[in-house]
Image (cartoon, rainbow, N blue to C red):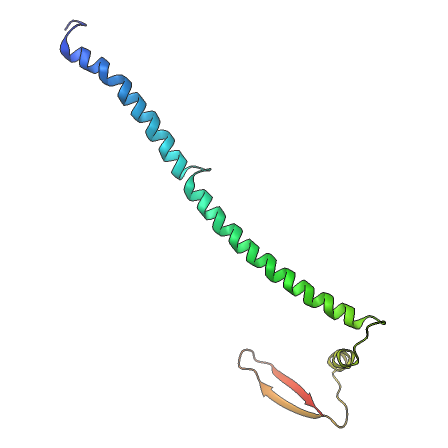
Length: 116
């Protein structure tokens, strides 16, 4: 077979498109499936959304705790909150209190409600 045969010429003409197609397929595959591909990007966006929700919940809890701390300071002392915390920590009740035991349905412990 000589180098000028039609089959050999056809093979020479097909080499460039085959190489170009292979390079394009490589880059397309890795742009979708790679470490920095679209699928990874979308999963990271979902993760960012989840983390933002956790951050918002944590911020909300922190604000509530800060309000409790402010209400327990000497200048802003809330008598009801102080009474509630003292009774809870000392496990005590006033003699005039009516104590109602009830089960909350979610745990094995009973909750004590004190009423005057």
